[in-house]
Image (tube, rainbow, N blue to C red):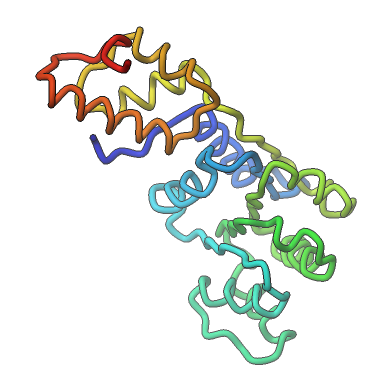
Length: 226
């Protein structure tokens, strides 16, 4: 199996959303929300984007027990600074490093913070002061949880829901990573097997490559999967 990152429609829409806030004109808020069911590649897409396009981006995975101070510590550390002790100083550090830059701050698993108004409003404050682009990544109900914060919600100029993989996604992913030719009948059979995640497609490709090797096949068809 080729060690390539599979580009799906979700990935393309993620990139478009981030580019949208990066290139937002004056007066347009620079926050994006990416959300959807587990297994659709939200975190993988974010880390792939950071590696390939977000050289100066900051990625922080939030935690269930995270407080506002803890979050600020991690953000400041990812920005390359030694975190201060006092919360007020941490806030100023984050602002001082971000202001006047175009550094993207990605906060993954934002659902963990969605019930803490002080933390959510602190993030909004940093965005408003620095005008830095922020990307929230959350689960399927993240939009509903965040809509409770009206002042925050209206700052999302880009909102993208990761959807189930389309038939075209299934074909594209398989053909991007498979080292054995896979014909349309096999792709149809795999896509018709149920709601697929990217991880499931990787397992399908591993299975097909084992079948091709064990049976000395030049390509995989639907009949080979039964």
